[in-house]
Image (cartoon, rainbow, N blue to C red; front, top):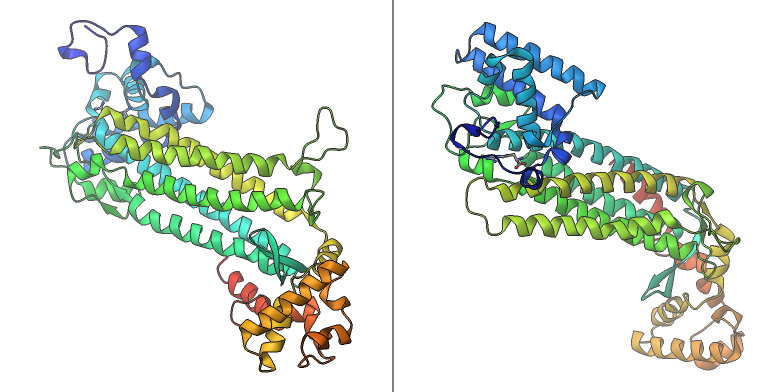
Length: 457
Ligand code: ARG
């Protein structure tokens, strides 16, 4: 006798260390709420379908409610000998209400049970992730609204490229997050499906009503194929994949925050609450939280690769390999929730060094395109205009000045098309102002963009 709930056909029991290796209770106890919810719906349905008597249903439900109460108090004691959350709770139920507790598992398998728990769990948490993304988007919009007129250097190849509104830069992240949000929302459709009643793989001989238990649990649909119901982990892969892309975005933003708060840039200052000091260098204020988020992207990608690899070679239907779907999912959830909360606070409380940014765009060649465009507007072929401007930039570099410092004589020597109105065109404010193509950095366009963004949150 093995002493297990499934021990009938066993002669010997496994050694403790083998049990420990196979057990998932250490981590799947996080599914306790969902497992009990699933059981309550299942037993309610068994009663409604006449599979269990109303008395039996009431007794089992009473026991399940007591377990819910204990779970809330945190007084449930799980054991490795009972392997996972499902068997632990079933054992506790039988201990509480007697052998009738053993009727709960009628017409059900742990295979559809665990899948149901995972669907319920993720469905709930997806909503939390979506609202955290929105909260972060709001913080970005608030900073953007405060920085529409803040000029900043725009970069390509991390080289100064063209002047922009700092709000325009910040809002880029808003739209990346908007796509992340949409992806999570879309994945809800495929998470909101009930596998309950699929049994081990083939369905059941009991006259169950899968639609009823699905409805009791708030699912919008049921799996149409019992084997698919217990084999499918796509919804978790989607979560990990969407989480990975979200982390890629957060990591890019984190990298900019780190650069911007360096002495070399000094474009922003992070609030003390989101920075740390050095144990040896008294002057240090390190952007630790941003660095940590950049680093945590790695573990989320790892979780995605882990699950894809688990799934790639397993035959239908359930295989114990699939127990490996959990830790990566819990870890990803924990990581993205934490990262979103930190980022929201970090962006909401950061100080934008408007003066430094203003100075930066006045001390670079990011207005060179303006000069080339100016010449092209006056009829010079753009390629030629590019060449003329490039030569003027080179002249400035030799003299240690910027384009706006050149005299009209110097400019006219390069091209007789240049007149004194060029100085207005070369001003960084004008460079931004004049980019009023749809979605461009022109101040008016940025305002329109922010108004559109507000409709999304
Ligand atoms: N702990 C298992 C898991 O997480 C539950 C399902 C077990 N089913 C089985 N037939 N062994 O995947």
